[in-house]
View 1: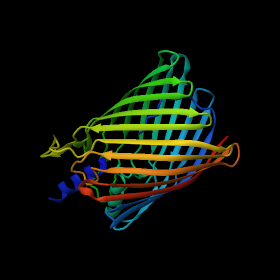
View 2: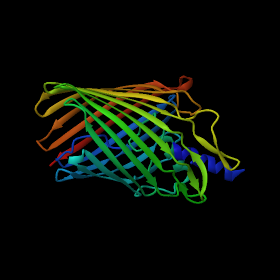
View 3: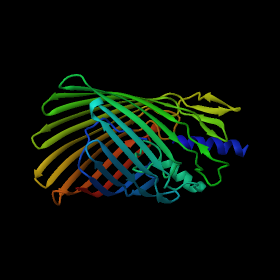
View 4: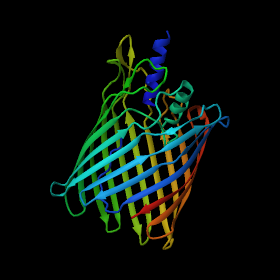
Length: 365
């Protein structure tokens, strides 16, 4: 959505727009997963947008202290009055090294620009639509420039049941050309993130985790001129997990708040008069049950709530329910199936409903 605002701003002026890994134990199991997702949203029963995506994930540990993960995807977007677009996405690599004696985790994220850029105007319209957070499409954008994000996390054991963590990440993105008719290259501003978190073992079978992340952005540029600056963002996450023998209850909640953006006016950046990026609260939950040794079943629930702003996809109130059976074909191979139904509304009471189905394979070796 950030790029969309900038491109619209620049087109208008010429005519008269990563993930930080959470603190976790280093896994020693190699993982390969391949999935296929179909997501569709109906807006006011007269417009729809669909996406079919095929994510690929690979995780490789090298010894106890070093691991590498790779994530790639391909997606096709279509719908009523939505121009079609299909492409591979950028490929993300993540390297992590654990300095055990110092309780440090060093990471380096790399964005390889393998996705589609230099979009046509119609393709750009579709790409901007799937970028809205309310839909949470598996592929919210296709291609950007080369980027890298070094990070560091320090774990601090406070007691047998409490661990604190401090982290910082710097994300750098190179310039790229998002639109074929765009005059020059767009240079996204760098991003700085600082995170503090706490993990609590409440009982032998229950844990609680919290973290607070502050994100700050530098101005985006074209030909050396600052043209847009995202407002600083504050994100608070909370996660609870409890086991009941072979069953599991899991809950995750997140609140995000962003300050006003700055737009270029008369050659200078000026804070927008009315906030466009909505604050948002989301939660996800599941209860995972074991029916047999090779069959698990999850009941899923989600909620998404967005503040009302001048953005056309703000003011959303969404609830989702679903199921997710997991079939263990063997000790190494699992087939997860996911089905979700969503219902809610946008600002001014526009009906919004969605559907998601997926099937995948996960190989651990």
